[in-house]
Amino acid sequence: MKITNLKYTPVFVPIEAPLRYSQGAHPGFSRIIVELETDEGLVGLGECYSGKAREGQLEEFRPSLIGEDPFQIERIRWKLGSPGALKLFGHILPFAAIEFACLDLQGKALGRPVYELLGGKVRDHVPLSAYLFYRYPNEKNEGEVSNADQMVAWARSLVQQYGFQTIKYKNGVLSPDEEIETFKALRKAFPRHKIRMDPNAVWSVSTAVRVAKKLKDDDLEYLEDPTWGLRGMARVNRKAPWVTLASNMSVFAFEDLPVAALLDVLDVVLLDPHWYGGIHRARVAAHVCETLNLDVGMHSGTELGVSLAAMLHLAAAIPNLAAAPDSHYHHLRDDVIQGGKMKYENGGMKVPTGPGLGVEIDRDKLARYHEMAKSQQMGSWIEDPARPGIVTYYPKY
Ligand code: MG
Image (cartoon, rainbow, N blue to C red; front, top):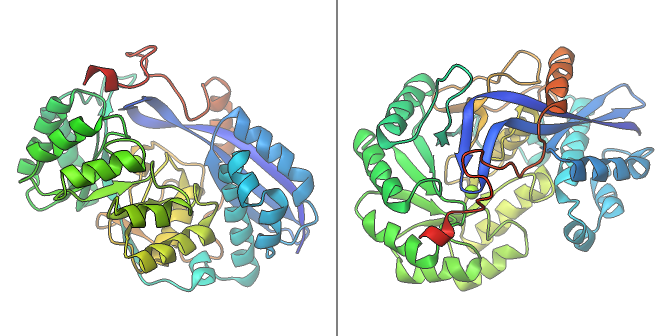
């Protein structure tokens, strides 16, 4: 089988209401859908973050991909970017989308799901978290979440609708004291749920330690990236040793794993098949974590159905997945895959069992959401309209 063409389509898919996080806001989810066409008529699917830089990198990949065999992923990886080049030139995200598409093609050619190319599945069902954000109201003036009561009410509706057993509460938007109070309100409303916090590394070490002290008796599942950098995380760990720390911001590449282990920085590594350069490599990273006795969870990055399928296949094949993966998916109003949005079941999702990733593109929806992308600011950095010019709240702490 030979690759004959690479296509990429930027899309913007609406969400229930705009999401706020420490460094910006999401009006909807903007992504790039990647398709690898082959001489056998099979099409492999991939997906990555949006933005002109990523589109340019994919454009540069095309001549190197045409004529390649999608089973030769290591050859393709070294052709498009050896480890140093992937990091230096920032190719890792679009390369991951190519890797997803190659694995999708392999699975389709063999009539086997991707998890069988990863050593087989150790679970059929992947638990996912309810992903709580502060939100702006939508165009119908609905969906606003700006205080503890609104956050708890929304969490109740999500738990009731989807059966979530784990709640992720996104922080770094209001003051730490307000967010501590809201965590306590969530803990009171959900005494048996796992609840995690994530301020996206905008708190200082002293703020992070203060939050950890205030929540010492509130059964925090883990504190995700309370501050930036391995040294900052190590200081939080030393000053608040009772807190379980997780990261996808100070630990997000292979070279971070042994350093994090040696410094004894954290307990949970949040893997991501996009940031580790593909599903295969994220699975290898999980093996490294197993060796280092680090627990594995999974980061979410506003994925649509293609990336979510990649995450589910990866999660199915990782024995040491110790924390429910995060997913933004329940925020979406629609998806670009056939059959509409993938269905939640018992607080998670079943692993797709069709050949390859097990999802196919809905051409009409791809065209519709590509049209919407033309009038949207694309990319991973979108300013919060209520906080123009504000990068983080850190100086206010
Ligand atoms: Mg995170």
